[in-house]
Image 1 (tube, rainbow, N blue to C red):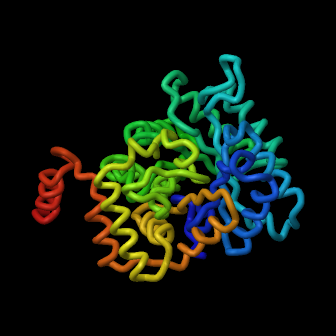
Image 2: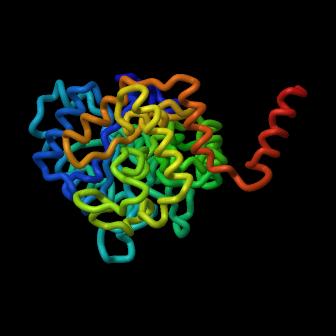
Image 3: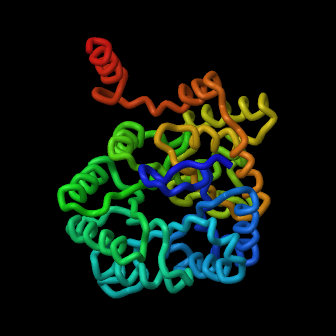
Amino acid sequence: MEIRTLGRSGCAVSALCLGTMTFGAESSEDVAHAQLDRFAEAGGTFVDTADVYAAGESESIIGRWFADRPAELTDRIVLATKGRFPMGQEPNALGLSARHLTRALADSLRRLGRDSVDLYQAHSWDPVTPLEETLRTLDGFVRAGKIRYYGFSNFTGWQLTKAVHLARELGLAAPVTLQPQYSLLVREIEWEIVPAAQDAGLGLLPWSPLGGGWLSGKYRRDQRPQGATRLGEDPGRGMEAWDRRGSDRTWKVIDAVQSIAEARKVSMAEVALAWVTGRPGVTSTILGARTVEQLDANLRAAELHLDEEETAALDAVSDPQPPDYPYGALGVDQRSRSLNQR
């Protein structure tokens, strides 16, 4: 499996990351441990979790896996977790305050059975806590040896840029990663967030690279989902809800992915994952699976590299077509003219 650095840090990670949101929820502990074993066997070295996943059970399951496996295996794993969302009912049981993050990290380390984690991420923006307080807290974790690096998840472009420059102004440790939603169906981050991350030298860790399962080929245009799939069990589920995401553009993207998959004799998931992993600025693409079989299918994407023609075809059909200047065609043309005039 290809190895890349975690943003501008010197930490090396696999280009595919095992996401563990299913652990303790959709995947039993035995299945979760089997996924971790299979991922490590395939050369994966990067595992991502969060305190809020299954109310802490995902971290506990990972912690027991670490305890049950030999050090020569677990020492290769770069471990990431996140904090921000509610982990209790009292007012300070959420957010990016010094109080909550200090408690959240301590609880995560206890569940994971670790003295430190490699990457700790603010799970989303906190409009209440002063950003300086959050950054000083994360810097303190680095200095105390409780985390080695920190990053953000679900930040917008301006939020990310503000955090990067404030950390620099205050002389604090700099963030190294951003974890955004990114797929052939969700490309709007390319307008502001991707350039902001690249400007700051942050590595992107895309989540939901299969668009909540849409890009795996499990759904059909003329048939509402049924059975043991996410939308079969709950058609109105979150961002990938059937009526919300089932647009004409989505089906055109799915058709294009299927065409390339059939020509290459690979799965649609492999094509969609290879596209994301090959995007500028991406460090590691986060895989999510309920079963070992699903994980195996996704891991095959590590061996697939799309050619220029295939990439261009997917880029064209998935273009979110920004409506107006400065993001649309006029903005692109103006930027191109400016570069050519220099």
